Each structure stands twice: as C-alpha cells, then as structure tokens.
Amino acid sequence: MADITNPSSTAAKSYSDFGALGELRGKAQRNDKTALRESAEQFEALFIQMMLKSMREASSVMKSDMFHSNALETFEGMYDKELSMSMAKRNALGFADVVVKQLSQQQSAPSTAELLALRQKAGSLLPAGMPLNKPQLPMPFTKVEQPAMPLPVQTLKPLQMNKTMSLSPVRNEP
Image (cartoon, rainbow, N blue to C red):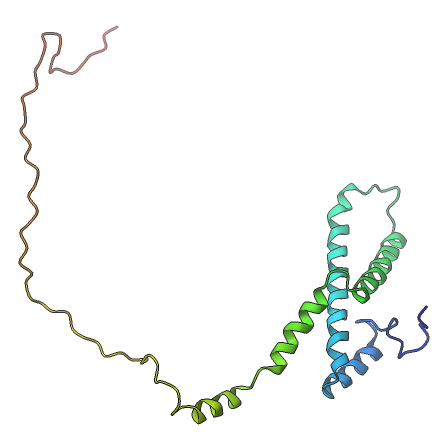
C-alpha cells in the first residue's frame, strides 16, 4: 500500500496536489522521461473523473430527494477522484499510452530549422518536383466546326373532340 504521507509517493500525486504539480513541472523542464508518463496519467485521470461526473449528472434525474444530500455529493466526488486516479494508474482506458506515444513522436520529429537545412543540403540531389506557379496558357478563341445537333421533328395532330366534350368552363349549379 502506498504511503500517502510521503510527498514523493506516486500514489499520492494528483493533478490537484500543487506540490506534486510543481515537482512534475521541474521534471518536465529537465526533459525527464517519467514526467511525460506522469502527465499523461494525470490527464487520463482528469478525463475519467470528468466522464464519471457527467454520468452522475445525467443520472441525477432518477435520484430521489430522500437519499440526496450535500454529504453524498461530496463523497461521490471524492470517490470519483480516487477511482479515476486508480484507473489511470492501472491504464484502464489506455488513453495515457496514446498521449505518450503522440507526444513522443512530436518530440522526436526534427524541427523546422533542421528540415530547412536538410532541404538546402539535399537540394541539388533531389528532382525539382512540380512547379508551384505553373505558366498559364490562354484558351484558344478559334471556332470549332461541328454541326449542330438536330432537334427532333414532331408532328402535331389536332385534338379529336367528342360530342360530350365542350370548350366552355364547367359550372356547378345548385
């Protein structure tokens, strides 16, 4: 079991513990590899706690007034915080691993200045590539000689009228 009185204990470190945050910030400034992992775990814990809080708020409609109190809300908040910290330490969601992987890739990527230096060094060895400003050619205004499409020929036939048909409007008489 972790000693919660020892400030250097990893189980006692939380995103709400300002001393631990200061220590973590110092590690990050020294480029300590454990600082990235600890930060990712605390981020995952905060994410889990916010998720649990949202779930509790969504289910608050089903709570009755008889069992609802401020003390219960305080207990649930503390329980959610501890549960989120323990889930993050056990890597329950795997969210911290993804954050560590993503940030490690960004740290190992070359800087813009290094990329520009490499591009200048290799400029003569690489093909020029596609030009950015391609010369524009005007469209020709010459008339294209093609016959026009013929319209379909329709022959109109006169309407055959019966004796029952009339051209006058229909009247509705009472």
